[in-house]
Amino acid sequence: MRTQVAIIGGGPSGLLLSQILHLKGIDTVVLEKHSEEYVLGRIRAGVLEQGLVDILRAANVGARMDQVGQVHEGFEISHMNGCQRIDLEKLTGGKTVMVYGQTEITKDLYDARRKMDGKVITNAEDVALHDLETTSPSVTYKKDGVTQTIQCDYVAGCDGFHGVSRKSIPSDILREYEKVYPFGWLGILSETPPVSDELIYCQHDRGFALCSMRNENLSRYYVQCSLNDKVEEWSDERFWEELKRRLPESAADRIVTGPSIEKSIAPLRSFVAEPLSYGRLFLAGDAGHIVPPTGAKGLNLAASDIHYLSEALIAKYDSGEEQLLEQYSETALKRIWKAMRFSWWMTTLLHKFPENEGFGDRIQQTDIDYLFSSEAAQVSLAENYVGLPY
Ligand code: RFL
Ligand code: PHB
Image (cartoon, rainbow, N blue to C red):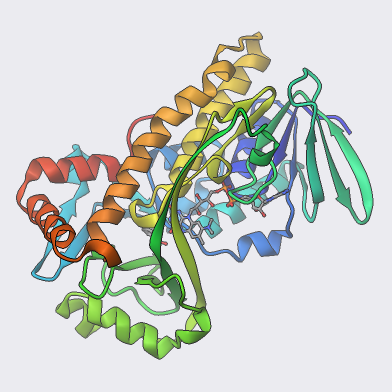
């Protein structure tokens, strides 16, 4: 088989790239290790920056988002002694975010790919990348026990943190920066009305908590947990009790609880690989970087990578111009590091760090006091939360 761009990974990054390139007449094949049902079963991001919203609309996959997504003009931060609304719209001169789940985006992308007869090969095993440093790379995979080869011009590594693409870059070229946090997030999804119209991020002595949502009858809640915790140890009852203890009193009083329909623990990590390209391979999304979810930046960063990479590939196929491809890694990394900083900062501001007794705790409280009392600090938070320009 031959294609122009072989895309490894059928998550949001890979599908979005395939959709954008297809609309410009560029041929792609997406190779996904798992089934579509498996990919759609993962509950992940929920907050979209305007940049991602615009990309989805331009890629003809924004219709359902525009129908059922919720525009949020602000969110709340609570801590032991009070609550502060961050008025995104006012602080950024009119910018907002959209609450629409990653699961829904991925479903819209799979549907769009099917409608356009896009080639998405699921359950592709043993994917391997070859001859990346030449002008005729290839990708092999096994499907139904038979090994297949795809010849291509370029390979897009969109296969997430555990994928094979990043590992195909020689270790003497790849540099990795990593910070692992000493806690995780336990998240649940429940078919209950959200406790508030807006997200509430809670800093608390017992640990961080977050109230989020997917729609008017689907809530997403998280509590900071220990890395040693097992999901089985957290009954629904224990989860709701712990959540209520960390919420502002008014929210704890009115929260509607119910059975969880999904429950999982995610470790928190900051990670960047440099460079994001090697020969004819380009990494995008979680394959190249991971942020802790506190700033809601993971999926949004994947989208800005795909924006830069698709523009670069389109320029190459339209006019032979290779400069944008050569600059892809540098261009994408500039934005990635800013989101790394913001996600690290918001994580540090709002979580209970086991080693933070004393000085660290006081600095954290002072950082929150400063944020609550300074419009300049709120403007900085808001401008990062709605998303820095591409
Ligand atoms: P994905 O979504 O991981 O998709 C990668 C796809 O590649 C496939 N794959 C392979 N395919 C072929 N061959 C191989 N060898 C392969 N290895 C892997 C995988 O099956 C998968 O389908 O990466 P992508 O597309 O870059 O999208 C990035 C986003 O998914 C990610 O940034 C966010 O979801 C991060 N994230 C969150 N971000 C937020 O903004 N808010 C959140 O609340 C939030 N929660 C999360 C998250 C990430 C999590 N991970 C990675 C475990 C919660 C979790 C649990
Ligand atoms: C979510 O709804 O899953 C969500 C929202 C905001 C975050 C992280 C996760 O910062």
